[in-house]
Length: 342
Image (cartoon, rainbow, N blue to C red; front, side):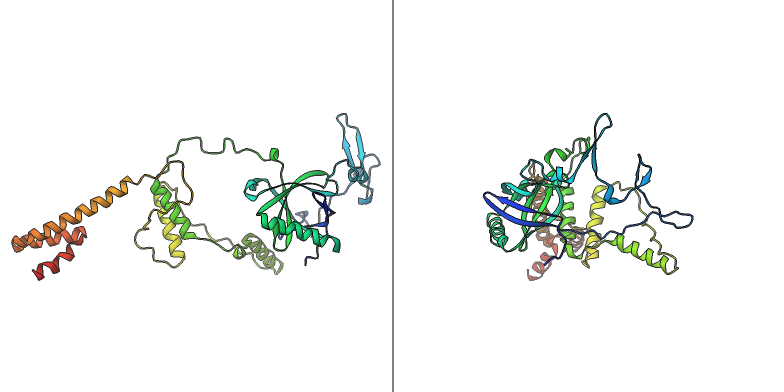
């Protein structure tokens, strides 16, 4: 059970059902924070809050909120004013709809919270909402007020708890206009096959295995300087030039990924077309590959025919035929036992 201080107390409004809950943060930051110091003597730099009318420092208990009007007039706003706003979401997470989770654009995702049932009376309706969300495979869209503004939220089940993701309003998400390349680029199927092979070679990853290497490096620097030692130096970056050939870069990437996994990469990265999980706008052209296969079969037939005719030729002609079949790496080797059996 999480023993985290709640940041908001209220209720979930689920039709005529009211579920008393506490809102707690679902995430925590592990980033290293720094203090501002005077570089000459290491003294702390602190910010003090002064009242510009009395020209004196004030304590936190003396500080309130105020709205500055267009003419510069300050209108005081108290916490009581905000807590008594005439909106239903002031102390309520009001569920307004249930939708499939794929309807939510990840760009809208904001802070995450856990909703904790508040008291024994909340246990039954809380469990009811949780199980209803599970069975429907949907998420609940809700409105709530927090930190001085009304917000949008998405409720979903995480383990045995209900989590809520704050959502940005749709008009707060910018459209990606003008960000894509403005030149016409043609991507060939072979390039897509190499990209698919690279994705398949890299495979999946357990997110639990990922960690913050930057934070660990900063901790090493702090520990070294605290012990009076020289901080570790960054390794020299690998020398590399500008990539001019995309195909070569993809092939090298596939080869390097296979070698890192201990697989045999061979002299060249062999890539086979992979089945597409999703349909593309333009169907894949396979005419070239079919013609290649047909050419191989035709070459094999010709080689077999030539090997049969070679029995009637002189020994010198047989040597030439053997040399040709060896150079082409065709099934001519199989014709050798046929000659002996004849």
